[in-house]
Every structure is written in C-alpha cells, then in structure tokens.
Amino acid sequence: MMRAFLLAVFLIIPVSAPCKNLPDERLKTVGSVFVRGNNQAAEAARQALRSGKTCLSLATKEADADAVLDIGNDSQTMGGQFGGMGARTNVVSGTLTLKSGDLVWSRSERGNDAPFMSGAKSGGSALVLNLGKDCSCKDRKPKP
Image (cartoon, rainbow, N blue to C red; front, side, top):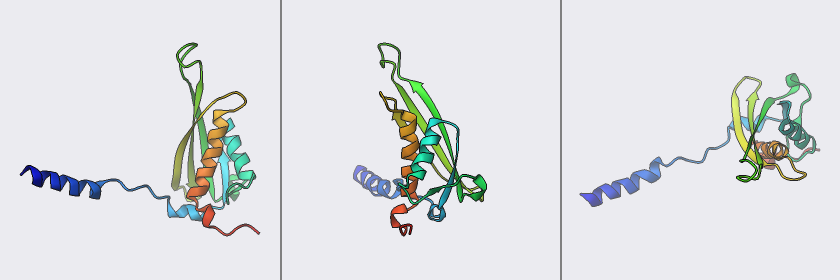
C-alpha cells in the first residue's frame, strides 16, 4: 500500500509542478516605450532605452508610445552602525501597460548602493534589459 502511494506521489508531482512563466506574446508588438516615474531608477531606464541596448525605443510622449513602463523605487537600510554597516538596498519595480490598458509585464530588481554606484540606477537599467529579453529583441530584425 505504501509503495502504491509513493509511486502515485512521484507520478503526480512532476505533472502538477509549475511551468516557467513565459512572457506575454503581446510583448513582441512593443516597439516604443514611455517611462513614467520621477526617480533615479526611471532616469536610468530612460538612459538604457536611449543607448540602444535593446530593440525598444524611448517615446517622449505617452500618446506616441506602444506601451507605458511605470517605475517605482523603494529603499531600505540594512541595519545601523554595526549590524549592516548602514548599507542600503533598493527595490525597483516596473509594470508595462499597453495602450489598451492591459498589464502585460511586471518585474522587480534589487540593487545595493556602493561607492560611486546607485542601486536604483542599476535596478532601472536591469529592468529595461530584462524587458528587452522578454520582448524578444534578440529575434527581431536589426534597425536600418
């Protein structure tokens, strides 16, 4: 009886295990993005879009964009003088919404502040790079 139970458990678990979340197919239609946010992470995201590191372009007006990327930044201190040496970590969150109002992508990135480096800026750049991957930039034809 116990063997039958264990066999059933081993057969059921792989079938019911969660699959990797695949990006929304509608991301492949996004070409231009308006970045909404007034923080270091949003500015770094704008800079990453301007630099051409992805197939996505920066729209300067929300009405001209295929989608809107809302970026928020929250930081927390990692203890006091002795516990975490006063280090600070940033959690940068982004959501992408199509013109239709459909939310098609969301992600959060963490970044730690370091000398001469902002965790918020690193998180904003990482968000754009991950968005580019999920938009299948690698598979798109290069810009002329």
